[in-house]
Image (cartoon, rainbow over all chains, first blue to last red; front, side, top):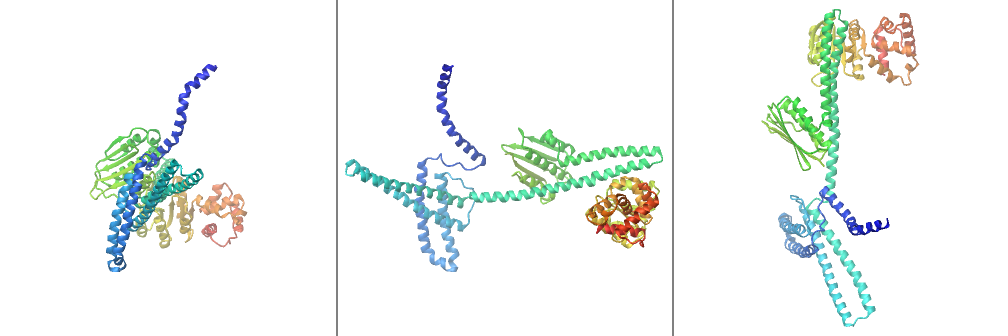
Length: 421
Length: 214
């Protein structure tokens, strides 16, 4: 027993050494995965410190250039800036230079710090001006702090040399080290703060800041939420109409047939009426099934999207070619949205477009499901019509995009891109 | 009797035409919209018009507006309005000009062929035919803290039947009561509702309905 135990601990000793390391690594791995999922830029931990240091030093040089530009440009253009007639031109000249310097800063951030900025984002002139002003100030300050660091290093060297030569006593050394340590701490602290400021100001100028991204997202969500409520209401109204104008009328007619049969004094006539009533009841059933299917196709739950779309093809008045290239299961909400995009567009094509054929393609590439409905009809689909607006909100609710291309004379193509995350 | 129909559901319209024809009525016209209805009535002067409230083009209240206009211009023409569901304002608008030769029925009632034909006869005879469901809702809405609460259950049923437009004889047959007992119940109702005895038959219905609407 004991021997077994000690053997196990001995054998596990190797693993026990690895385990804490693994455990320490896990949170980092998880954070990394989370960032990957959210599509956030990776922190630049992987980039060598030397490179970042080089970028910081270079930042001091560019800051000097920026300050020089402001100084010289300001002095040279100052009078023209004050005179209203030449103000626009002078400002243009000054801003042109500022933009060029800002582009340099952007490149510096990208190369040395690995920042990723949106491609085509262009900040307003005022914003760039302000950025370069802040940047120049911060850069010069950074140069000062770096200078102090170098100065401190030189002093430390002299101190060390003095200790070696024995000219400095213990008490004096202790005081110097204590003082130097505090100053070093303050200096490094300042460097960190300035680096953070540099990164933040760059992000604010060259790309939407986190706050702006959040604000935009909130706007998007509010809009899509309102649209979803609207779409749900519209759908309810449609179902109500379907039931009242279709099913209810037919049931009343059916009841009337039976009532007439009951009143009929002639048995043969009553029989004929009952037969008619029987047929009518089949019709009502079929209609009820149709309404239910339009409200929600039950096949979607039990048999999946491909089968449900097959049902659309079957009931479609036009020849429909279906290409379905989706491996693996899709999220339920995405399936439903895809189904309604297809069924609504196919119905529209059959009703309004005078098309002779429709082709539907559903394909998944990575985490994106693309649904495409094309007809060869006369085009001119009304993008703001009830049907397409409802579809757009349905797709938007899933963070997807619906595009309608329908020039007069046709053909009409509707594409929906649905993320399957 | 000579009838004009206006109903946009083809199925129902055809069914009604057949039914009326079988009962020996003459269907002068069967229309799918309310616009031509008023013109047809002006030209042909039927005894009775059956019209759906919701009709093309807007499917809101075209039929009702046509019915109100017909009642205003040709008071001798009976009007039966068919409705999808109970819409109190519509019923009130229809009855605003009196309760002679007028009816408001739910569409479902058409399937109860006997009741439907009975309603037609009543309207033709100068009476009213209000859907039991309409009456029930009116009664339910107005029973909170008012004289109706003082009615006995029997009196209430008699009142409901009366409000639907039935004659005393019909009420007696319907509720399996003797004629005198119906009259006794009704007198009790009128006393409790403080209605004067001087008014005529249809005035009574009107009074009851007006009272219920308030």
